[in-house]
Length: 86
Image (cartoon, rainbow, N blue to C red; front, side):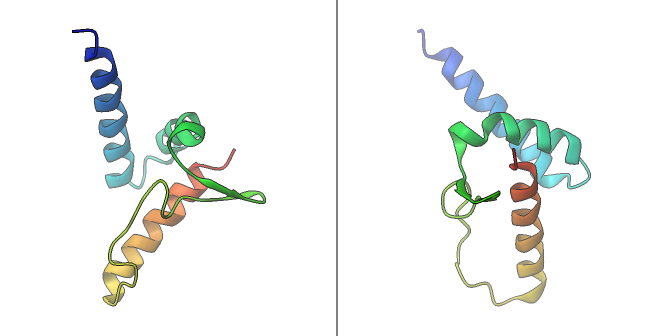
């Protein structure tokens, strides 16, 4: 008892994150969601850019050899970095 609020918040964040990641056309939602979470969830500032890999999202294997899968992963990382910019 008393911990259900934290669980609910984690559930909402996870569900919202899953929604914007699997729906690339939801850029507006992704921007709002990740801008709200960027400071507490992830990102390593690099000048005016944000690096989300290895802190906010850990993709394995590090070296992706399948070009179709690599293109999907690169697209996802690019969207997440764009959405995470202040």
